[in-house]
Length: 364
Image: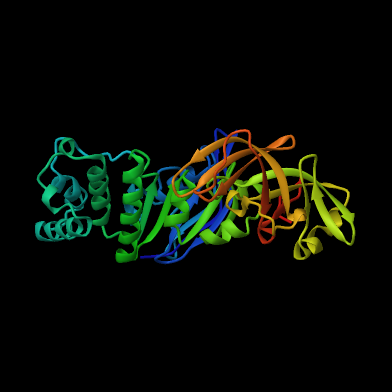
């Protein structure tokens, strides 16, 4: 096991496309860190530079205390699990898992011990004599994990390993991966575009966009205190609602409003946005922080809306509503009796309001 340090890492393709821009990360020993972001944000390129599968334009990658920029992948003491299982179809599960050790001239007894130990951890002992074509997608992914585990590497690198699985199996394998990491205690870097995977798997999450790191933090830190509008909209499902508002001063309080709503800004937030009076801002509120208003809710913390779509999900109902010239999504109780074109009043949780600067998109 070892820490991984990434310093001022850059990658340019043909001196034109700047895919990774000055990435700095310190991944602690035994930590599970997830790189997340949309397609093309540079997360897989960063992982491939750590693995030695992609050359580094500038910067350094350290595994342990050793700079590995010029080391080939086989000498970096890492094991990688890809989106494609990449199993040899003519070999049995046992042979697939043992192949890397055999190429490194391990003794037969050591190979057998490691393969059986990994098979026990993954619950695939009864599959060792089968060929990949006789396995389900989840079983093939376990074999790919087993092939990595037998290496006893310092670092595990995962490149969207669950993308080929169906939704139910992805949830199951997420749980298995988390259990596996807790059991092995090996440093792990995991790449995904799925923010739910990132939030459930990562000790810390690195959000990337356009080759730049937007924010690094624990999952709930990113959810509760996003650094900017991009992180706020990317982390959380359904995504955060955004509304263009103007801040005004009235009656000894600050108000955020537009044609469809007028919200009294809570005192703690007023101190932060006082400098924006008379200026446009972006207000953010998560769907789970909206609910159907009742008689006890103050009118200055609620607004009218028209229901456009009702999504009944069992544990919750998502209301897609029209608010003035914009739209929002509200997550309400599953017992709510609401239908399309109903006029409703939505109350907000004032402690969960977010505001973002329009120019920099940074959280205020």
